[in-house]
Picture 1 (tube, rainbow, N blue to C red):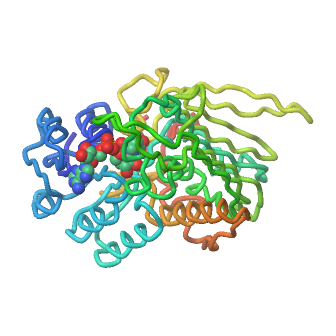
Picture 2: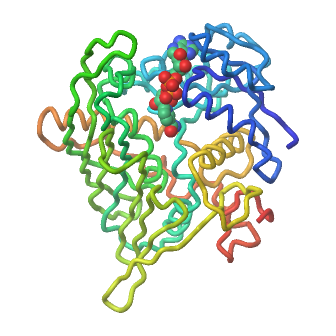
Picture 3: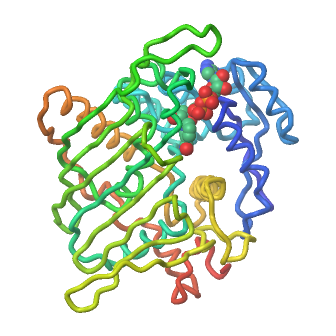
Length: 413
Ligand SMILES: NC(=O)c1ccc[n+]([C@@H]2O[C@H](COP(=O)([O-])OP(=O)(O)OC[C@H]3O[C@@H](n4cnc5c(N)ncnc54)[C@H](O)[C@@H]3O)[C@@H](O)[C@H]2O)c1
């Protein structure tokens, strides 16, 4: 571990702490990737701020993010605040000349996303990305490699899903994620959408139309402090059916499921690509493996490939061991700092343009549900999408690539 990048964290709740934990687990990564060192933390709640006092790197504590942004020592900021604050806080970070890794959905709505873009236009030197960790599972990256190699052939169908179950507990108290004021009108789509969209968007599998069915299944929840019933206004579940297209000119159905109430799930993320030559599907229920079809003449059988720890950024863990959620965050952060420093990054974090496309889709989904009609999305300029990223060569340059290594650090596998 040579270089460090000095970070501030704004929002020291669930995800702020995950970021801190990953930054202190950097020894896990091989290859000298610069380590995010959290020197400053900011939260409006003292108790949440205090949690960061355990982090040996954190020296500065703030209640107001604007004070943190005055510090010349902070080079980059990770922001994990409620959705209604994204436009204001992300804009302030970018205008202060800091690099930003912002949590999804990158603005509470389309207008907020455009406000963040305005700040980027005013300070184009800021390196800005949005989080999305699930594509970093090695089995998903195997799917990415196969797609980029053209192994699927003509695309038949694409599906992705995020299925939570914690809201199945109707006694779970209300929090900001269940109010339109703090979470936005998208409801579960804002909360979960990017997790479903990053992978297909990055592969150039883009929706061109959308129909939607939305459900608000639990309409009131108790306030944890007072016990009072409060309206639970946000959409719990969303099913989006799209016509998709890719740069090869294929047109195919795309289905996106974003569910807060999915019986039998925990936080299940699924990616499925069906093609004329091959199909593959991944689920976090079986995080170590990728299922894919093997053809026998006219018939296809599903096979299960255990992938283990063949990570994008090499780690000390043996290749046969299982990969999990916190590993995916570590990989995502390695991708962010690598891209920030111009190091190889075969699969980067969600870009602002991809975030904009996600807002176009989710806004159109709200209209589609309200009107009961399919909505056509603004066209996607093909050259703006990463069917193959400019830096894909760096992965291919790995000497061991013939053995299936996808390492971002040539020669390190
Ligand atoms: N990538 C993922 O897997 C994932 C998972 C959950 C949440 N998220 C995203 O992370 C973000 C935060 O969600 P969370 O679950 O961590 O929420 P949380 O409620 O646990 O944490 C939010 C924190 O922000 C603080 N905060 C509120 N206003 C603030 C302000 N003005 N300045 C500084 N701090 C302030 C709160 O006190 C709280 O500590 C959201 O954008 C959410 O969509 C991402």
